Length: 122
Image (cartoon, rainbow, N blue to C red; front, side, top):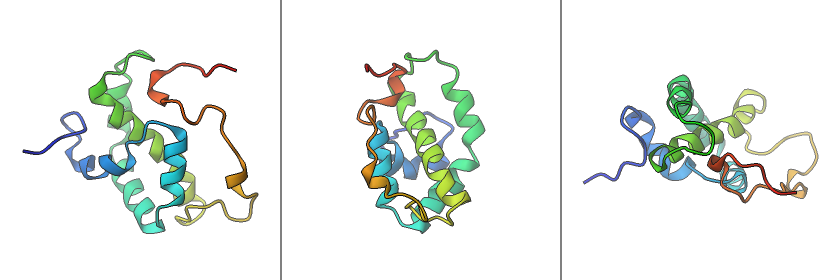
C-alpha cells in the first residue's frame, strides 16, 4: 500500500514530496543548501510543469484554512519559489555566489509553519 502525501492529480511529483514538502523556511533553507545542483534542477523541472495547477488547487482555500491534505503541496510550491533563483540565476548552485555569506542571516520567523497564513509576532 502506497502512502500518498499529495492530493489526487499530483502523482508525477509525489516522489519529491518526502524531501521537499517542508513546513518552514528554515527547513527549506537547509534542504537547498544541502542539495546538489542536479537534485535542485530535477525538483525544479518537475514542479515547474505543475505549478499553475498547484497554485489553482491551494488557492481554493482561504489563508489559514488549508486542509492537512494540501499542506505538502503548498510547502512544495514554497520550496520551488526558494530554489528557483538558484536554477535561473546561479546554474543550480545551492549557495548564493558572489554575495554575502548567507549563513550569517537569520530569519525571525523561519521556524514557523508557513501554511498557517499568520503573521509572526514582533
